[in-house]
Length: 126
Image 1 (cartoon, rainbow, N blue to C red):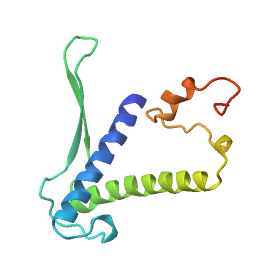
Image 2: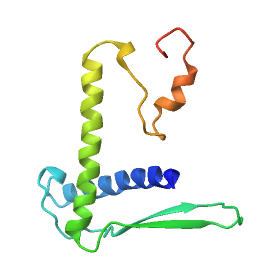
Image 3: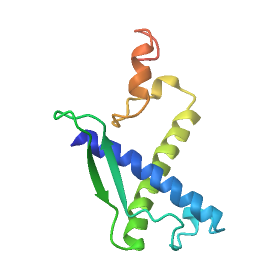
Image 4: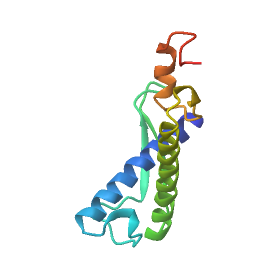
């Protein structure tokens, strides 16, 4: 279930990007305008597809983003706020100019978990 939640979080980011792109195509300016309009491509649910399972068959999980455009927009706005906070924290960390200030994040899909083992022990990895 935790793996699915991480994957759905990533899918919500893609849905947010699609919403922002469509808002910009319509001239709405994206999230900053925060005016829900009928999307060109309706995003009511997200589908996570597992191409293999214990049964050997593909399986999927769906996440409903809400019945109304306002409900869906609220979920995507929450994702936007979360990403904005992550970006703000990264900017603040970089401004310290202290590479040892970096700490592991708690997002299992983050690249820091992939690259961290590649550092030599006793260097900035610790």
